[in-house]
Image 1 (cartoon, helix red, strand yellow):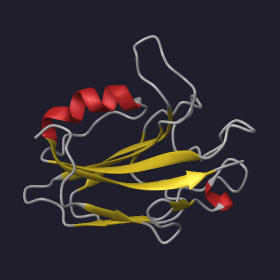
Image 2 (cartoon, one colour):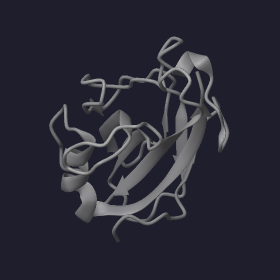
Image 3 (tube, one colour):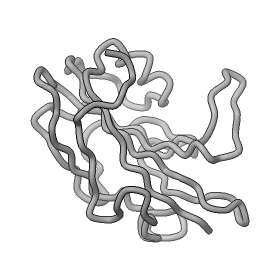
Length: 158
């Protein structure tokens, strides 16, 4: 399928589409991942992955990628449809804070409002992946197995 939006729906009780992300979910607050829930997974879904990425971050790496990765989470079973706030379940990948797990929004002072894209990806393969994968390592492994995806965008400004 490749990377195209599908009928999969992603939502949170913490913020609405294009709404402000509460401070408790940021590096200035308690740094807790927001609750997330999803529905309309495509037939054949065996697993899910979650990503949070800030494309507005002023960072470009040597490999041409851009922005800042805040969360990489995977090995989520296909029958799961939600994550609790602050969830430490499933397999945590490496974020751009050079840590495994969630690292909340924290744009540079005075940099203005940033958008944070929370993605859910439905996979047709539930092969166990090792902990600590970066976003790009995860995408390389799962790309052939993505059968649905969608996003929830929140905003934050310091």
